[in-house]
Amino acid sequence: MTDKPHHPLNVHGEPRAFFGRRSGKRLHKGQDRLYAELLPALEIPLPEGSLDLDGLFPGRPRRAIEIGYGGGEHLARLAGENPATGYIGCEVFSGGIAKLLETVDARELANVRLFTDDALKLLVKLPPASLDAAYLLYPDPWPKTRHHKRRFISPQTLGELARVLKPGAVFRFATDIEDYANWTLAHIIRSPDFRFAPARPGIWHEPYPGWQPTRYEDKARHEGRMTSFYLEFHRL
Image (cartoon, rainbow, N blue to C red; front, side, top):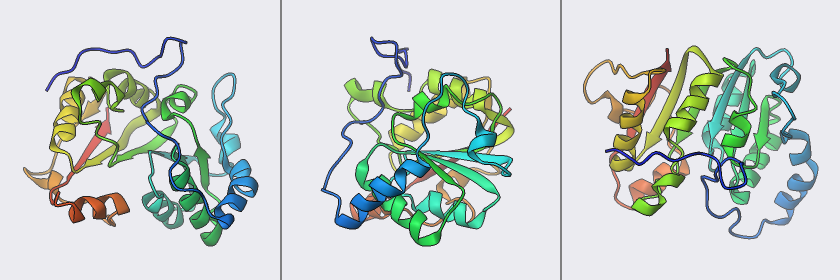
C-alpha cells in the first residue's frame, strides 16, 4: 500500500501530532500525587540543542526508547530486567502515564525517563546514533484513510529513527491490524536505512523472545483479533 507524501511539521513549523486525546478517566488520588511529586523528576524537558543523554542516564551507555507505551507494562519489564540500560518512554495519554508512574514508584526503577508530548518532538532533539533500540508496539492504527497522516510510521519519522539509532540497532513494531503491518513494511522496504530479514516465513506472527502480552494485546484478543504481527527491523 502506498501513501501520499506528507510533512511531519504542522503549519506552525512544529512536529505534527500523531495522537488524539490526552486524557480519559479522572486520575485517582494516588495517581494525582505521583503526577505532582514523581513525574517532575522523571519528565524530560526539551533543550534548545541536542538532548544530553549522558546527563539523563549517567553511567548507562545503552539507551532505548518506546513510543506510545500505553500502560507501560513492556517498558517497565525491560527496565527492570536491564538496569544498566536507560529507557525513554513517550506517551501523551494521562491514564497510561499514571500507570507507569505507579509501576516505577512501586519497583523503584531508576533507569526510566518520560516524555509526555509528541514523540517526534523528542526524536528531533536526540543526538545521532544515540539509541540501541526503539519500540513501537500496538500504536493507534488510525484506520480511516483521511487519518492515515496521523500514523506514526512515515518516511520522515523513519528518517528520524534511522538518524538516532546506532548501526545494528533493533526497531520493533507490533500490531494486530494487518493494514498497518503492510503499511509499515511498505515504508521500511523503501527506506535505505533499515533491513527486514526474517529468519523464516511466518516468523512475524510469533511473539518476540521473552514477550509478555500488553493490555492492548489482551484487548485485541478479547475483541476477536487473534493474529498479530511482530516485525523486527535493524538499522543498517
